[in-house]
Length: 307
Image (cartoon, rainbow, N blue to C red; front, side, top):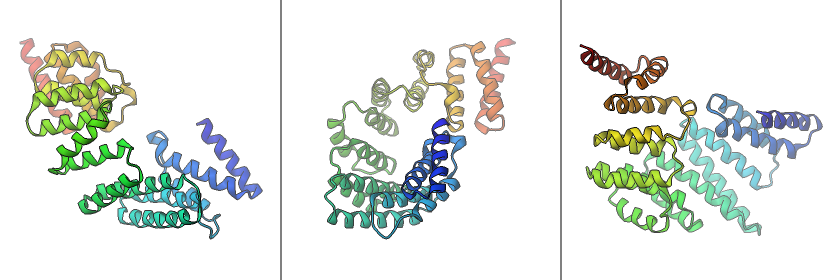
């Protein structure tokens, strides 16, 4: 929070002095902080929009990178508001402005900026499941930035989630260049899981976890498959080796963590270790259907064991 307070202090000072360049830069930094980089409970999209619009009012008619990326930031907020078509329109205007700037500037970084804007348009079309536009903007992105693997992984995820017959060929192609990317093995694992080839799925999920930062997503995918296969001893070992902090999990995934952990502990007869997790489950998800059903199941089973 210190950096936020410092930025806000200098922003107020710049406003008093009328220094528009500092206002433009400070507003953009704060806007992006409150739009996406803050902790979840501190995010404030309305404040971000106000900051961006204030900064935009200081730009003249000249097209600049900062002016373009101010509108790129605003398009992000439109996307978050589910105003996807408005976001696409604004981003395309940004791209056109950047292409104009490229004609009159020798700045080699412009092409990198263009790839960021095209990538953001691609994200919008991902959300709309507009296959033709997804393919069109992915090809544009490939031409602009052929060696950047992360967006190719996202395109592969899109192909997989939408049942495209092109997934296998495409994932094989990028796997050749990205042998150290856990996301690739995770996608292959999910592909085999969907096709009921659980042995292959397990092999790839294990490789994904091994290469990963041991974050929740990779941990959960592997745990889920262990429980599907009844490999509870392996699941318990992985539970004990958990390297992320439960207190830092978002509520959306905390319930998944608690439920799968309780299933593992129950099947390993670790009833005492279940108690604190059951209390957390009750506090945060007492009315959740999944949680209520799990608690009833566990209570019935424990009751039978005590008879």
